[in-house]
Image 1 (tube, rainbow, N blue to C red):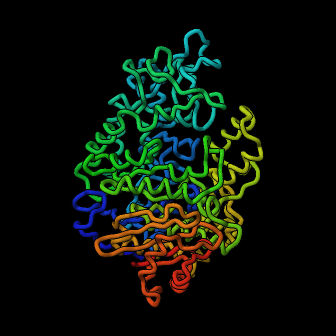
Image 2 (cartoon, rainbow, N blue to C red; image 1 turned 180 degrees about the vertical axis):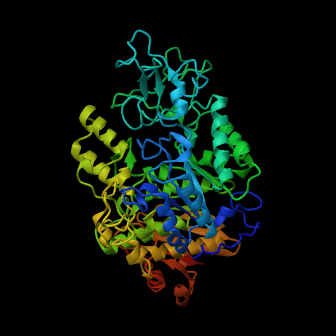
Image 3 (spheres, one colour; image 1 turned 60 degrees about the vertical axis):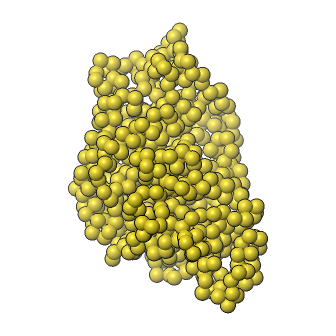
Length: 609
């Protein structure tokens, strides 16, 4: 098998503003979470050989790029996002030889491989950090070390350099008895932040990145890369630190202030990213560098991804996946179409003239969209809502990302007890919010975990209906590291692969459209019917070609809203089926819906105007 052929988008057609257009202008990326994708040795964890064994599946789907969540050597405190050796593979996943084999086999099928790189922080077991624990070592300033607050016993409550809390719960400062100081960690206490103010840190990071590029990988997805620059005063002090000229944020209900405003899209982000581009990617071809971008606004996305500024190719923004949250991540509110439309519209409008957008609803940190905003209560509504959100996403302008199992309509885990969870963030948040700060009830916290907890995306890939879903052998000596979703008996790749009406087959159609239709790949985007309650509608246009996309994001019948209806009325009724480019319920059903100016529950359609 080979990946689907992508047309070459004419340079007369603008994509992100680069000339010539980048190769990824009409590509689709597939994210693999290695520990949950395919286990070949029966130890309960997925591995690199497992990914290699499934390349034909990915080639059939038609994806162009595979993004691997981290496979570097790691203590696995945060499932590999705590790296202890950037130039080795964790034995859990295999060897460097296995990685080389994966690269060769993927490239043979026309699939590129990008690696997930975490350089905002390392593991506390990394050699750099261990060396920095000696204040006389050359690495002493490679992390954010600070002394205890004056008048306080180091290591005791209240002695922390400021009041920042970690996003994973507790203080963002950890005392190290060996050095006699505290180190800063935005995430786990085993994930100390690197000090990017130190040029030696940056040189070491770029050297490592060049080592991987020279080895044959095709680029990086860079974890929380917009958090590498911190706000400091003219004396190098952090906000809220003793003697700092910058005041801290107020303390919240959990007992800490947030470092987020001072550590996200900081003052030197553009400088660092441009330097990285020069030192690693300049004079290379065929690569992709995409950054996870906490705190970056749509307008800043335009700047960072504008080719003229030579920083990153694209970014992951998060405003649109926070539309069901208010305040804390764990305080959820009902999904409303208007909120999603507003946030995605802002992202699309920001890159209308330059730059590019990453399109996603799911990844390793987000729950399954079909359970979060769709309806997985019945087989009919699950498949229909999975297709609806797929159509909505893939018809926007940008590069779509498919998270493993999303193409099958995999659902949330539906865990009911805390001991079923493995995610550090979830367990720490429960302890801090329910048991310590008591700002959330046990019932509401469990509901929030079931809806948006990260483990919902991390249950094993559902290959077939066997005991462990084909993720590992039914006779394996160890069970999977996290429970297989019981619905794998019905929802799995084997059942959907040859079914023309399956979610999988629908994703194949969407990916082929991205590859072969220039309007879908590069056409202008314009939102319409902005007041519609259930229907999200927009147009795509390129020259004389124009598409109308309408998606009913509800389980109820919906009228085609006014602006969309006016566009449809310009079509000949007998041409409705012929003019339908793609529909979640098929072209015949779409034609009938267009004729009556109504959409069935979870129905989406793209029609040529």
